[in-house]
Length: 123
Image 1 (cartoon, rainbow, N blue to C red):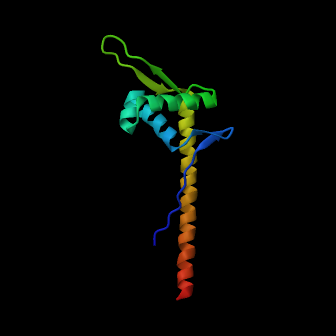
Image 2: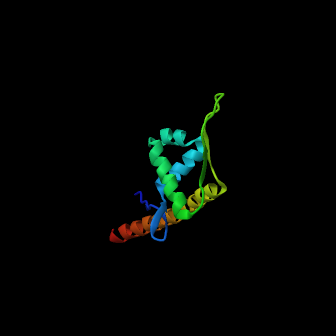
Image 3: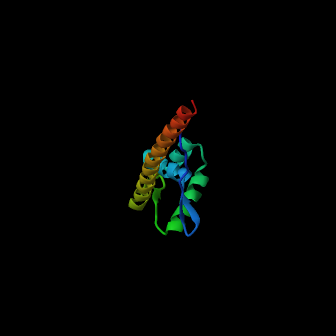
């Protein structure tokens, strides 16, 4: 018998959503590919959606999360990178997920044992 405990985590400030799985994926993709357009392609989202999502997170938190720059002449393309605050938010969310996964696995194990014990008692 397989038992799993599932959850979804998001962070709110003042009761308003700041970051959840989608925002995490956006920041992670920007960090990995080094551009907003590349992150949009990787995630199958529009550039505008990602830009607006980042803008909303930054306004809610009052800090800059992503530094973006436009391309120039000579084949130098634009790009983006997470600010130290963006890196910190990404790491914070990853730490939350790690701890929540550990707890969920513990609960699943405990429930599996209880169900096993109940079925043995019925026999």
